[in-house]
Length: 84
Image 1: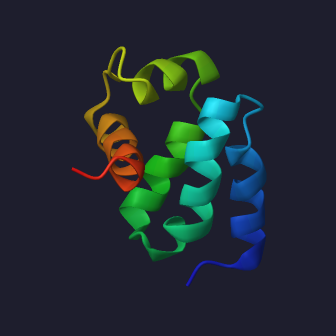
Image 2: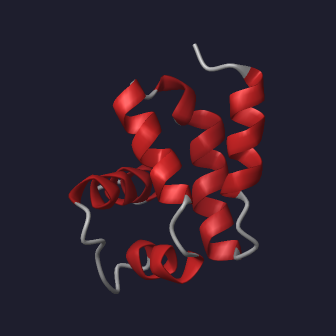
């Protein structure tokens, strides 16, 4: 179970100040993150350490992360809002 302190911290770290990222990351951390396994939680935290411009390119599908785990997390977040 994810503690409220951890969720609150991640919520604020997920707010990037760039609307395009905020609308993807904030709902994800609220609705999906608590149900992730520990490996995926760690990958999400690593994603938040990336530069906004890099993440923007990944989420807009202009380019991909060189890190396959980060790219998998980006895809997981995108699949949530872009069902196939």
